[in-house]
Image 1 (cartoon, one colour):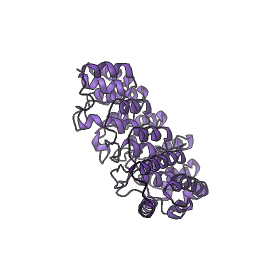
Image 2 (cartoon, helix red, strand yellow):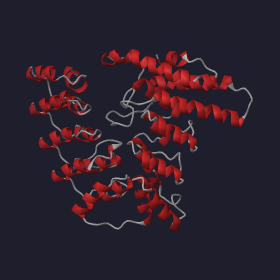
Image 3 (cartoon, helix red, strand yellow):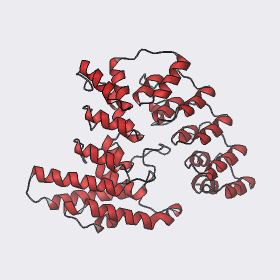
Image 4 (cartoon, helix red, strand yellow):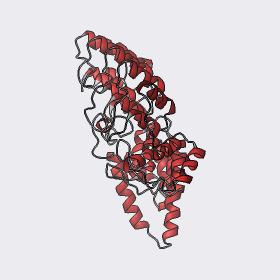
Length: 383
């Protein structure tokens, strides 16, 4: 990695970024502009502006898609002002599952303002996902009523089936409307397609808690997988440190054994996320309390025979996988999916390692006692 990447992409130091660029650093190092999109701080935006002013190319950098991962309108506006292509083709998964910046913005549940900016810059309002879902229908499916109305204004009306109306009502948290539709269509949600059922994990991944809860209450298959890393709603709630939604899902039948696309389950997700803190303000200790309670209750219900040896072995294996981080991650996989393993401390991690160590130990104290393990085992397994 270049020094410029460290200055602009990781430390977001505009003074050092300018110094390096003025000394001849290459702004097209394949990293700096992309990672300059990852912070909402004004210093990060200043770094991005310097890179662009020194010739950084937006095309093929994934910077536009990365800017849409965050609720940072200023970054989107900056890229569009410097010629970003609002119809830039997606180059790698999971972006290719959606296909264009407009569809990615909707998938990330960005605001009407974001979508308006893309459309004003020339984004195609008729864009469709590879599976054939239009931008308008995708907005409805993810509970973005204002965005759907904007797309209707720009592209014209589209017929919406009763099933799609049901999904839209669930996604926006309109329980009365959802129940009204289901009264005439008792086959819902069971008759929805696999792609439509993925609305539950997609909503969970993007913080659409109200819609996700309503979907579960109305009988959505709780273990259906989706999101950037083919994960269940429980895995995604745990990843975000969303303790309240984690407890709700467990109370409604979710299992901590639900696997995700990296080959681990919710326990491994908890191990990784509690160390890496991928979402600011996440409550992974709260997630651990919910998971521990569910495991303990489930164990009692199944049998009163002692099973501590097998549980110890299983939990130790999960902790070791959590130390390495989920396997098979794709670089620039964008937010909502783990980017890096947590086994090796990097220079930028050092100031927070002590705090993270305390969090990991706290998580261990919550998860392991019901399983007959010492709380310190988490710190030993992940440290």
